[in-house]
Length: 87
Length: 223
Image 1: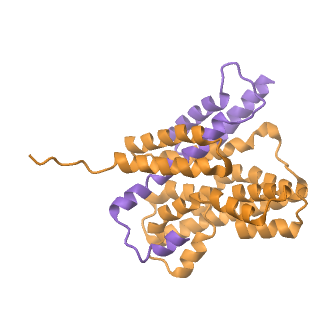
Image 2: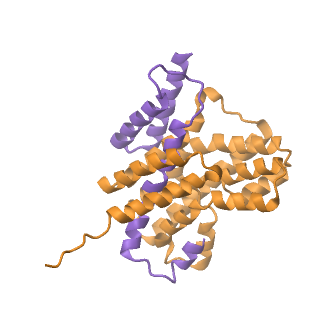
Image 3: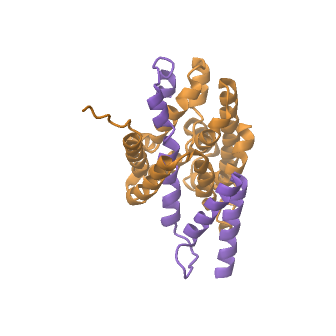
């Protein structure tokens, strides 16, 4: 709130705006990576971290489709399929 | 547009909200206390940590400070969103500051290039916030009443990182952004064991320092 409120009084330089554009790249992966490597799942996959593989494939789906819904649906669907096969 | 853009993201929000409602119920909070906390705090991670601390009879100051530390990342979000809100009135800024969440910020960032005017940005932002608030409040209430209703086999908790993948990819405009994102991924794993999500804000701070370094203007040599 304080920074939003100050924005009218302080001129934000182009350099600062450029750095602000890096904030998503700086913080969003910090949510993604721990969710992959620190998940206490019940699925045991002989090839290793199935969630990492799903994440890589979902990233490719996202790059090609640019669709949030498809990315999430693909990732969850694949994870569900793998969990059923593992059972 | 903002409301529609946020809809797919709610797939990851709903199970989290259900967990929050369930945890609140198990912690013997009343329905009124749960809903009030939901409205006043409106920050899932901070709410969960606060309820956990309260069940352990932690001092009020500890609960408050923990919530503040966990929510430090919203300072970064507000900084990033401030250019879009610069021309707005004080009341619009006040209204915009309250509903900031990880998801609404991420959706806003992913679509920012498509928003040409100030009015479009404001409308889009409030649309994302409205969707997020609706999904969060309803799922917490449902979790409180019905318990954690999502089957564990669906692994809906993985919808959160998947949605962030879909939201961060459009923001990686060139190699420098990819480097910062890769750095953030590695460091976040190393710092994840730190308590109260301090690792998250440290990771962001270090990644922004890296961004500052790799985007610095080249030094011109004077011969």
